[in-house]
Image 1 (cartoon, rainbow, N blue to C red):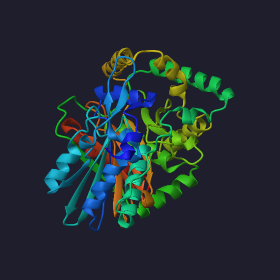
Image 2: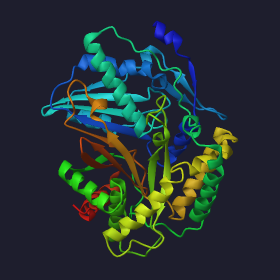
Image 3: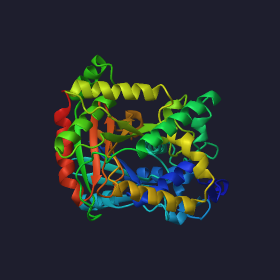
Image 4: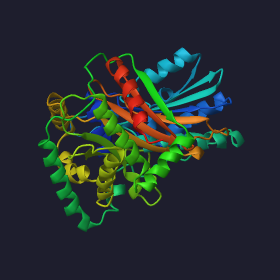
Length: 432
């Protein structure tokens, strides 16, 4: 046993956000993936060592998730169980790795696969969502990259484990002044009541179906298109994310001209926006879900849709965007045993599906900084893949790298054709 291993505790306390993500195992395969394409070859042995050392640098990654009726916890794996690297022999093995699940209960919580393809190396990181959200996945990539670069000069380097960095939501909430809590709670009550009163939600027409095989769908928007979109958004006093949301709403309605229902999309908020450095103290989940509702419809054209969305998002950003549900539900959730809460939330999820009131979702996973994925060589392209949700649900992801945007989805057979058509419709709606 290394001296470092003796310093890392055998058990690590689970956080509320870890447990919350684990409840969603009923509606999807809770994994997030980061794929990188290189023109050059990476050093296989050094990369494998960097990946495995990251399980020490961020100890929760070298654990398994252990269920208990009151509070689950993270249990440190023996060194023999912490192998997290695979060198794919061919494209088939690489794609099989990408389509496979990651077992949060056996660990480790991150796995990496490298394929020396004829066109250049492909590197894929697969992370259990219980351990990290998209922001955390990018931080994991940065840690692996940093260790990989350092090992070139110091082959015996071993990183110091991050034992003091908080994984708790409190690192966000402590930046919220006391007087903001009552308004946030009132916002939660208003939104919760409004969602309970909603009619059926307008969603993609997806039939329930088999949960294999898993495939991946992408659409890329190159630098010139992204630049034009950003300029258009600024001219309309809107963000790039607002523009994409507007295209999503319009594509959703135009693809299905059936009976009108409530126009609502779920989107994600990275709560690291409230941290001074924009980065968590430890690898964790620090994101939230918000609903965007267009009560008055799309409007007559794209500009009208965009104006309605930007009005909503501006208002929410001025009122502690992303914190409503945590302030409203965390005290209640924390008072209940894990096993009981899991049963209750499963029933809530089932009820939403039965009432056709579970909206489609766009998760903006943010920008992948070039520095965080530089392994001496910079990737030609890099993008994130969102968790696959089981049909009839649907989740799309948006990520950026080097002034490009990638729209992505991880889908099952009954979702595949409509996702292809939907993504084409989204791109057709964008004013570029």
